Length: 306
Image 1 (tube, rainbow, N blue to C red):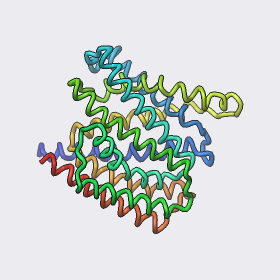
Image 2: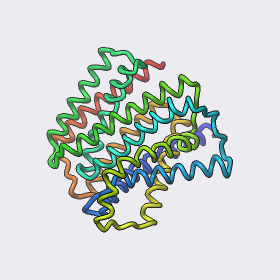
Image 3: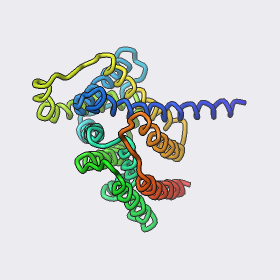
């Protein structure tokens, strides 16, 4: 009976992760889209998320003492936290900017490139070897994404470049987290990672915000609804926590499978929520090809750890 209870809890966490992940993506698109809430300032939105997450983490660590801060030296902060925060901030900035140009469905299809980006970055950083079987998988995924892009009715080169750049920034962040933190023997739980990384990411975003978005905010009439931004930031924070909860309770495989399931659901759901995002037959064929590569890649990576 105890096992089934634990299993039930694991599935509940996975469900929460899928719901929150899909919800945050759809919510961000709705907030940023000129057709809906019309807040076309992705850096500002990302800074609100980072500021809010950093503040909550500060209260949990320093005021309520829910968790203890790790022994953080200036050297670790400068060589680990700062570069990880820079790529984390970049991936969120570019990813959120893509919502202004391309549909949620197409963004999810492009996200199939994530294993390709992670594999390439891991090879460059020396944490993975260039293997023929994995490389062929990467080619399959890339071909699928190209086919899917070719089938995209509302293809936009600017949005695609932003999204792909965001994917590579996120891949580099993941590899750097693995290399830098593990090398220093540092383990961060969801609260301490936000405590150190969110404020640093906020600072990194300040420069592009000041140069790119602040001048526009002074000229145009931007509507600011406290409850919408508060609930949006709260959802983003809950998603960050849920990712770590799921990682703690399940294997990497389960998360990857849940991620694939979430992407399919999100593609279908986004066409209902945002009727203007049309999916073509070529989109689906391309994404299915890419997904075959992703599934095979996950299978080969799991076999490595067996």
